View 1: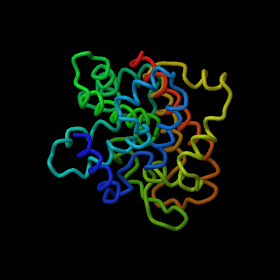
View 2: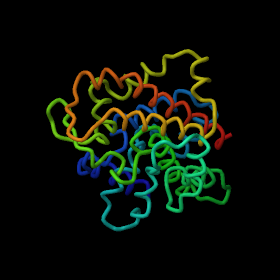
View 3: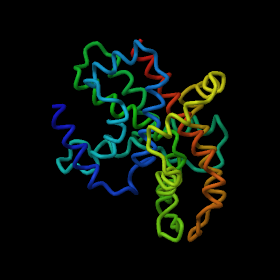
View 4: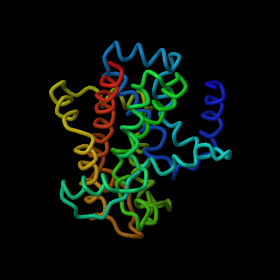
Length: 264
């Protein structure tokens, strides 16, 4: 089973269009690497055993790669990566909205994946696949365009140029701002993980609902400062570079909290 999954990862990493990858390959690997650096040693031992000593970063983009699968096995999971909500909601309004959204989404699925991993009756394969999804979806929950608007498909319909190259605002947040820094995922994770323990604890505070509302507020800011046809380059990158980096930090550190809880 695991060998088949590894082949899927290697092949689809080449074939999958970047525009459908949340955070792009670099961003998701950064988040997974930060999480791995902040979990308890006991948690890491259990995860290493489950993943046959592959680092979490290796599997961090698997949930995107399987979108290229043609068997239909994973088709139902495509909607797990986001949750659309109208703009302008206050905290309680947003939480009520995502709790009552009938379609499966990133908010509804994260607790289910945690439950699969914690369930003593789950097979190792079931736990492993749930972990692949969990690592990825916690990252998605911190990408603002995955908390975007239904009418523009989370910014996919908002056309922009990035350093004169045609793209859309969703893709800019998926990968363009991250990749503009020209770090490997290990370099970036080491840099972003160097913050103080006090700041780490502050970023880890709260619930899944709190974390997603934080991302939603950022999404509102992104929408307020973009227009169709905008020409983006250095000024936009400078404006959101540190915001983007904090989202990667939050994603990794909060993933660590979740992993420590479910592998205790």
